[in-house]
Length: 519
Ligand code: C2E
Ligand code: CA
Ligand code: CA
Image (cartoon, rainbow, N blue to C red):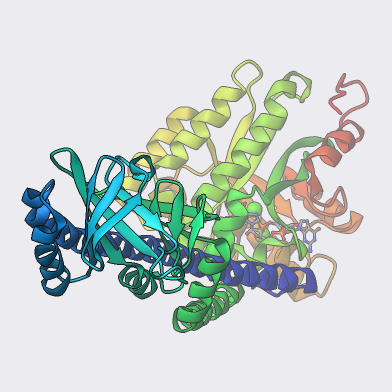
């Protein structure tokens, strides 16, 4: 039984497959880490934006509260109002100054009291909010001004940019956040700039529902990479380990010796079992039929003879589909050319004892004969005498049905076993095939010849057709013919041949006048 041996090319293929599994798992691990990183960073940025908005809204709520407190003083003389303005600065968190305006002029401030300076209401986004890089008092210190409209004027509450800057810095981490009011923005570094921040990669933003500002942030591919690189070393090591393990297991599995059954089943599915045909000659020396012998055309080990795999095929039960396959190949090849075969041509198939317990054999035989129904042939099943067939209800039915179909039964290797007369009758045997070990004795010492004569004599007295197998020389052929052996088979006439060669050889084995040309 041929087991698996690996050639360098197969080893290479195993290695390539294992490496592929390794790389695939590594890629899968990297993809999972990438996906997790993206998901985490996005959800993190959303959380930070919403947290920052809450903090900014709270600061502006304070400004709003201060504005509400002083709004009733609008229009009153500054001398009466300034005390209240200063109280707001002192008591309300985050508030730096509170000013009152009438028309386009600031007339009262918490810092100076009485005041008189122009201001531009159009600079306020939605009339409510302005972001300034500084003011005349602190020109380099950013501030945000909240404006609340009142009777004939407005209240302006300024909040120190320091609060904004601090919150932005706290919330930015590896992805910087920007606070945008109209056409000005402040980043985590604190300065106020015109326009909008440059956002690369994935952009994120959140708008305040109450005040005229929005926050934005972004994640560049590099930031994704950096995060994945810094935080996923542990997971990547785990995936690498897993990939190594899977690659190793793949290498091992593909290198595991396959069981003989598996190897046979594989070969069957690949159509590697093929028939060889050996001519069987009649008394006149013409081909009267053939015996079909199985060969295994192994892709690596070449042609394998049956004694190396038939015993295992029998033991595993695979011999049944294998024989069915052999019958199918022969009928497909010869049925279309059957009109060119000599009348009564017979095809002999070897059947093991186990196969006789399976009724599917009847279907295979029916299909075979059916294929030749226009030009009938004889189908012979050769049952070896070495294995006695156990008589069961199945065998009774099987042989009755085979008989009805007109299938012939031959006892193979006759003389080597112990088939009794009742045994031969039970299976309604038509042919006896005298084993080649007896034929080989012909021409040797007197005792051996005596044994051969006895076997032939026994076969003759059973009144069945006799085939002698293993005929290798003229002496043996003449000896057997002189004793009225009906058919001869052996290397003297031909070795078993592949179907194509058998077709080509057949005309030379037939009487000259037979109009056969099937090749
Ligand atoms: P077998 O049924 O007795 O088949 C005859 C064997 O003798 C064949 O060997 C054949 O090639 C060989 N042979 C034919 N003429 C000569 C000759 O002149 N001299 C010598 N020395 N040998 C000759 P092969 O093909 O190797 O088959 C061996 C055995 O394997 C067969 O013995 C048969 O028992 C089994 N076998 C072959 N094909 C099948 C099959 O399809 N099914 C089953 N169940 N068994 C098979
Ligand atoms: Ca045989
Ligand atoms: Ca034999």
